[in-house]
Image 1 (cartoon, rainbow, N blue to C red):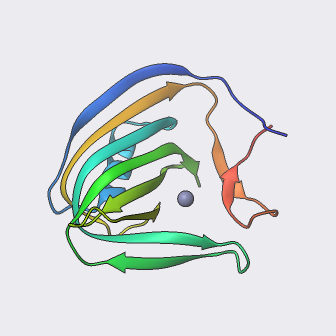
Image 2 (cartoon, rainbow, N blue to C red; image 1 turned 90 degrees about the horizontal axis):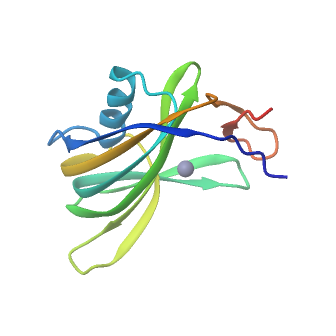
Length: 144
Ligand code: ZN
């Protein structure tokens, strides 16, 4: 059964991320610096290389792959919550190459920004914390 919380919008940050920075670490740092604990994030732009994850459900581990080439960020969507008391950004991206061929996955550290326009929406409400989930092996939101 789905368990949902209710949130109110508390503000929106919009800006340009730093060239050469790590995409996931840059957004996580913005959350830490602005004390953002709950929210959602989206971005478009380009990366000079990417590292993405795919969760292998059978062995319950992320498998990572890299793409060492310039790529468009067609779409990045994610959410912000807490893990071990710190803001954690969970985001997925779709990237495309010079032929328009796209692929995607779970955004991992190692994806380097070429240019990126980012919007973060901050939420007011119950703070969700990620805890290990037995059914999936993933750190999921603890819902009460
Ligand atoms: Zn994911």
